[in-house]
Picture 1: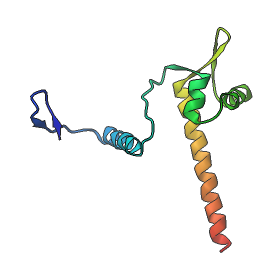
Picture 2 (picture 1 turned 180 degrees about the horizontal axis):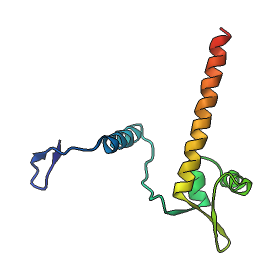
Picture 3 (picture 1 turned 30 degrees about the vertical axis):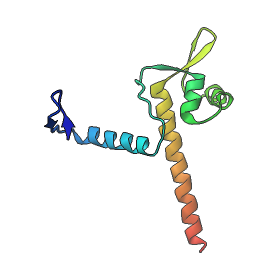
Picture 4 (picture 1 turned 180 degrees about the vertical axis):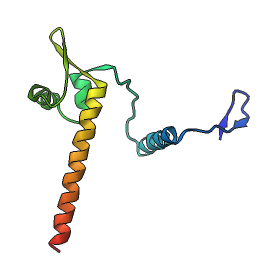
Amino acid sequence: MLQDEHKKPTEITLPPSLSCLLMQLLGQIARGDAVSLVPGHEMLTTQQAADNLNVSRPFLISLLERGDMNYRMVGRHRRIRAEDLFAYKRVRDKKRNKALSDLAELDAENM
């Protein structure tokens, strides 16, 4: 239940997609993880992008130069669109999860 401006309880109905998103957000906060909302069109610095991926800035730059992620030059500085960063992160996480599943299967076979 939420409270309206008069402190009276009020009920709202959320679409399932928004409800799921809010539950994930609250779960992250409950675990003490940092949470930030970033518009998809926002341009991030290389340091912001590296922090989001939890990698070093030089490693991120190597990803950019290798062509793993799109970026733009603004003057002498690289900028990464948040949407491109999140797309890269989804693909990276999917590959990691598959590799972990494959390892677990191999381990189960060897028992």
